[in-house]
Length: 123
Length: 276
Image (tube, rainbow over all chains, first blue to last red; front, side, top):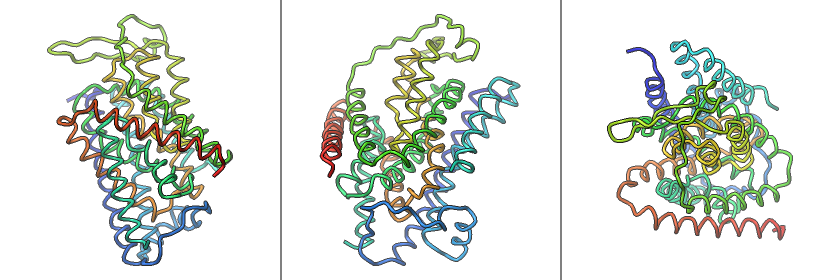
């Protein structure tokens, strides 16, 4: 079967669903663990004070996951979730390459560049 | 109220929001922020963080079903994602700069627009007449109808692209999918068929939201203990909703849900104008 738009979309659809289910499973694991570890009064979200820096970079989150920190596990799930649409765009770049559609290889690469910029370089 | 009860109540309310969002076609994200801010008194930054994450989940979760229908147009989606992701960067950046009050007021106005847009009777305006720019960008396709196909070509590409930028900016500023504005850009401005507009819009919502999610994450808007019950609830609700869709009385539901949205929109505008 040669590559066409329909095939790209089918692969992408399955991938998106898998990504979401994986992310949901990780978030659920972290959430249940969180509720086992925390019995205090409900947290106060009335005032915005930002999340601690350890939850804001991949290295510290990975460290937290290894040590069984529930918040880090939830964050890992959220990062998997955010990565899912990014993987979709990567898949489109590859699909259009197979279709030899230069214009759309370029278009999807631009979208990918914007996403990478927003995730890693934007401050 | 302790942590467990708070998480359970959030989960159940989010499940309801996701269910209604899927059944009415308005999306769950649009009520999550007012629900969290008006009912649970959560700061709007945490609320838009939780909402945006839920939007990514429902958009990606529904994608497989939309592909099966075969209406979405991957080129139209990809081309317009340049506009929505650029808009999302600006919108997400703005949340770190503009006062909380103005986010609330813009949110209320978007709620009112969404309710109006969902009740409006739409007229199919598609055309097969070539538009030079759309042809060059291959923004065309064929709509499966009965046992044949109906060719279509996008019109007024620059206008559609501009509106998509706006949809992206609103998505980044408010943590919503902006489905209503995306559909406006595609079927009103670009004259694409409804089914193509709505299914392609669903695909674009996840990518657009991912562009602002990174900025939200680095700005500390993603509070894990708040996000997990909300995201799991909205996702479960929307998956159940899409299974029920065929049997439900969509029109009545749309009217009821739109009234809820209008009430929340007015509440948000009044609250923020009064400076509460």
